[in-house]
Image (cartoon, rainbow, N blue to C red; front, side, top):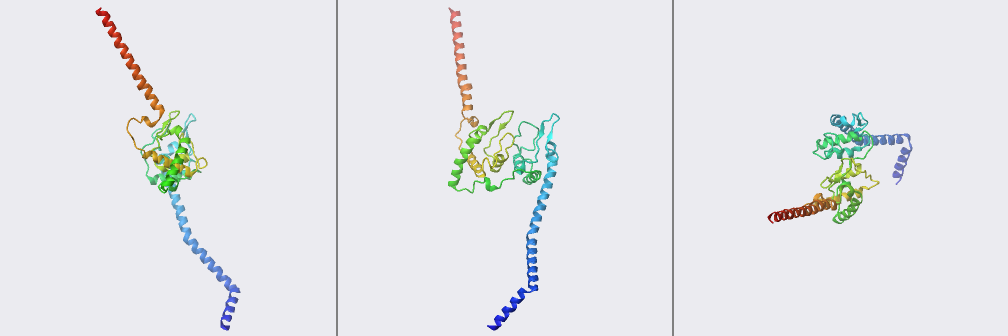
Length: 290
């Protein structure tokens, strides 16, 4: 017992001495240096890879986009002062991923609206272009898959999302895209495109960025969970069976009324004129015989 007390007393004196403080300081420096060596290289590599991605995106931008949008994304004006290509300084990566990922950009020629066509760039090139444009200013980022992927929902959750998404879609989207998402005409030569069969990511990005004539539905207007609900509703439209017949663009009573007037009533009027013409010929023939 006395031996243990003496050993404890010696350790207590050593802890209070200047050497003990120096040892603790050295251990702290070694621990800090080890943690920095473990984590700092990963951050440096990430920063370096992002810089390389932005550099690659700028090279692609100068070749395929700068003619309309300017060498630094500042936009290009015509001699008359009209906007030839809009500025991209604050559109964000999501806008680029949507426009280029759906083939709308680059445009073959200026027009009222960029139509959807075959995608020109690869996924890696689209990622680089998005990173470069994102570096020019602020703007929404490319959404994470969890924001638009409905496969993670249970069956009950999915049904709830479909009902809620249908209400949101009918209140905010049917005026342009019609109740079935088949699209429709817009003023000044534009049109609301068909949104059935579109990838969920691009639907989410379109709501987030408001491409062309479309309104921008930020997370303050339509929260991310409600955007996901709209996507779930549109997926159910894709799954609806086609019972045959003429869909007439699925435009509802407008196209059906036009068919009724021009074909239905028009056909009856033409038939009545034909009957009248036959009657006139018959009367003339009977008069000539008499």
